[in-house]
Amino acid sequence: MSENKEINAALEKLRLEIDGIDEQMLDLLNKRADIAVEIANIKRKANLKFHSPERERAILDRITALNKGSFPNDALKVIFREIMSASLSLEEPLKVAYLGPEGTFTNLAAMRHFGFSASYIPVDSIKAVFDAAEGGRVNYGVVPIENSNEGVVSYTLDMFMDYDLKIAAEALLEVSQNLLSKSGDKAGVKKIYSHPQATAQCRGWLEANMPDVSILESTSTARAAEIASRDEEAAAIASELAARVYDLQFVERHIEDNKNNYTRFLVIAKDYPSKTGRDKTSILLSVKDKPGALYDVLLPFRKSKINLTKIESRPSKRRAWEYIFFVDMEGHIEDKKVRKAVEDIKEKCLYMKHLGSYPMDEKSEKE
Image (cartoon, rainbow, N blue to C red; front, side, top):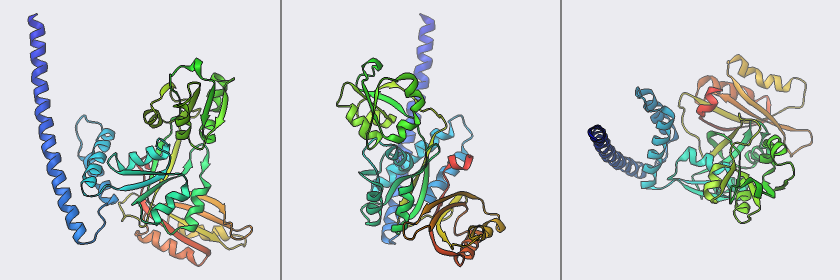
């Protein structure tokens, strides 16, 4: 009995310490918010952009570099992302359009990138995301560009030909597919809905575990989850976010065949941020139809020792057998060697467009 009293007393003492720390944190968060509002007022008077991605990146880098304690850096980044998102919302929440409906992986990528305090606007197509960003109805748009297993999203590349928008950031999201239903009972599943790409990512699991169940196509994983929420015999292959949004239970988690499955998303806007020191630059180009034309275009990058991280070709759809190349490289257009290389290839191209320079996603840096 005496021992229990000592344990309870020790616990109460530590809990009081935590309460005191929480109160200090609350006080400091409110002080930080007040200063953020002052900064916003100064920016408004000077007609400056109130959102600064490069400043956010600098804050996260600085905080994680200073962290010498046991609190994990990944969790620290999430916390400070939400602090910055909430601080921005005191002035004016960021408006972000994404490929909907609510609960898609694009929705999840947008929330991971901008935090929960932004205002998210689902639209029904990639083109509608570009329209919203170019028309000024939102500050940013988020669109998928490629999946590590299924390849590039060609339609997104096509949109860059038709819109004068820039890439302001990239976001890499680890894609985990789940089988969801109203009851969570595997035996009750008579049909499964999902987007064809998600179904393809889970084909092996489905053949081994649900061989006699009909697989039906939906326009998105979120739409599949919405259908399953209204049908007791249906299940959906979708994200954890979709499970929360549509109040579904997990029949099985992580059913994707390849566990190393990432989708890369692009954040589009009317401008791109200043250099952070760990950046990517993206361009579109079309080369002349002659032997060695592509080699001639790529040579300045080799001479400048610029690492090209991606080259993707697409028919231009403007002239037969003319191709557009989407090129990613390490570095920012403000870097002297990047700017020079880009300038050097202009005369060798039929067409060239700088799509933006932006902070490299940390997952991309590690690969």
